[in-house]
Image 1 (cartoon, rainbow, N blue to C red):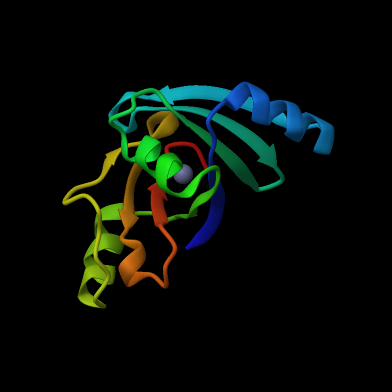
Image 2 (spheres, rainbow, N blue to C red):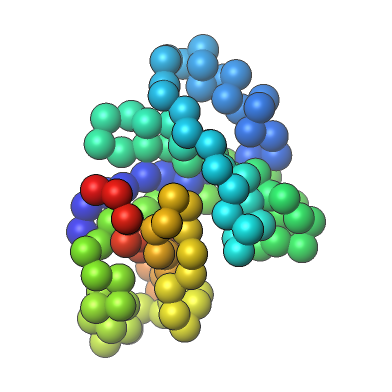
Length: 132
Ligand code: ZN
């Protein structure tokens, strides 16, 4: 497992990007993941990145997170070579996943999330990236 990115829930990507622009010059890639009802801005920082997530629907789990907890750290993500294999192994060790099968992530990746209740209170994303 390699550390891949940290996900930050925000109400407005534009406003938060202005903050990160002041912090340093990041290369920014934007996309939207329909299945997760989120707009994404990826700020590259070396081998890893900061993923800003803005909900596109009030019905999304991200919007619910913002209502309940406000803006801030949403998840940490590790990349894996074979997400099905990793899910099988981790299920065998007692971890619970949000989805039965991997979902579509950004830029052609396939993702799943370990429930925070089985991962020390933090939502953990596994991502099998198309680009390495
Ligand atoms: Zn993520």
